[in-house]
Amino acid sequence: MAILKIGKMVMGSLFKKPATLMYPVVPRKWQERTRGHIDIAIEDCILCGICARKCPTNAITVAKETKSWTIRRMQCIQCSCCVEVCPKKCLDNKNEYTTPSTEKLVDSFEKPAAEAAPAGELRAAPDGAAASAGAATPAPVPADGTLKCGDTCIYCGICAKKCPQEALTVSRKKKNAQTGEQEGENIWSVDAENCILCGICVEVCPKKSLAIE
Amino acid sequence: MSKRTIIPFGPQHPVLPEPVHLDLVIEDERVVEAIPSIGYIHRGLEKLVEKREFTEMVYVIERICGICSFGHGWGYCKSVEGNMGIVVPDRAEFLRTIWHELSRIHSHLLWLGLLADGFGFESLFMHSWRLRETVLDIFEKTTGGRVIFSVCKLGGVRKDIDADGLKEIVRLLAGMKAELKELTDVFLDDYSVKNRLVGVGVLSRDEAAELCTVGPMARASGLRQDIRMDGHGAYAKLNFEPAVETDGDCHARCKVRVRELFQSIDLITQCAESMPDGELSVPVKGSPSGEFVARMEQPRGEAYYYSIGNGSKFLERMRVRTPTNMNIPAMVKTLQGCDLADVPMLILTVDPCISCTER
Image 1 (spheres, rainbow over the protein chains, first blue to last red):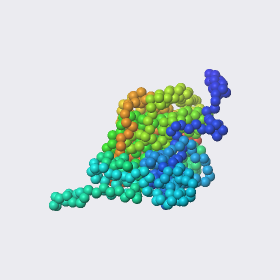
Image 2: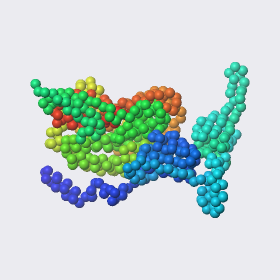
Image 3: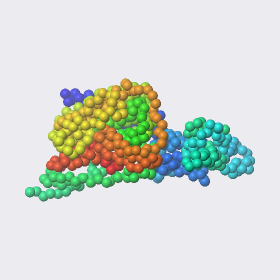
Image 4: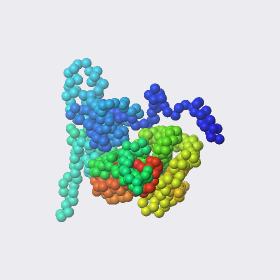
């Protein structure tokens, strides 16, 4: 009986493909959902820094001064937390793993200089003067529109709480406990210089009163 | 009266996948006493909870252990969800159950392989791990990770498995079942394997109860104890009976795990058949402010997750009690009076996970 069993297994194994893969001669097949490494479309990045703040391993650094986005590959655990929180959806988790290395890999991406003009146009500009003028423009200047608040606002302040740049100020009338009178004013204001048009406030607004126009 | 000697066992030892140290007091090849010491991979998770937001903490908790990672993530989510009064949609609960049961298959196959390796049956070890690969492939396809999934989040799950995906999983597992039967028959009936396992390290029912054992260790000694019976997740809607053996030896512990392999395949099939439609997750608003205890049946036994919130984004306190932690006293007890050659078997049949124990 045992010989029959072993014989069957030996014959089977002779003609079967091996269970292991001849890696790296035969490349590994990635699944659609495989989390390999984080990739960034840097031209869409608004350097808001939410990814760096939410990263469980502090693998991401966002420097506004140098307009750069840096990831320490060895520290990254591919949890996709940054991809999920990115307001501009410029982060993506790509299939391929990073190549093995004896050094601790650090990848840095720099945002193309001019924010006001589309990057393609700037590169095509023939004279250097136009390009340097574009580069001198401060980064946070809104590229496409400004944030506006409609008249359905209830001054709840959720937008201000969620703003990653702390560019919003909201306060509302309060009832004085002693006199019973309304005090203060209903204020909603945006600091246009700091606003990065990430759109988080528009998303969280319970009254859908905010819009980027 | 022969002389007593102390043999240091671990933290590096061929049978130990993870570092634990045992001082074995030996008298004539017989173990008189075993003194365990841990602390090689402590990571200070309970302190870290003060610095990571409770929503991001899921990623950290999942990485307590590479084998039962999904269960840890689920346990933590369950604890915080209970804390905040979040009701998770049915579909999410079913998907969580599927992934959790797949983890159990993956964990038990890994353990069977290690056990075979422990008693020197190399080809059996290879076959166990070959079968485990099927489950890892399912994981990668459905979640994006092979051992750490990051699909469980507060309020539900991140990814869905569509009807075709479910059919494919059921088909793969059905195909695996025949091969699994062939493999586990060797573990249960083979003469040489039985020689190493039967009658070794017997833990009676009373001892198991007294030493607070959990999981397969308790069930092998005749205790009918399984947290899945309380009906969390989708378990309340599934037909399920815990695998209980009465012999209490290494062979019984192996038998319990083998039976659980088939039981998990059955549970996944049931889940796939009765998968409800609906939302994958509900939004999480506010911060936890109460306290809550959640219990999970991990592949290794009962795990306990306690969280207390203070209304801020950071939990006040978080405690995880893992199954191996509870099984170490029983392991020490079974080691007393055993042969030195049986020590690896006794340690392996507890299925120790030191990463879990030390957190």
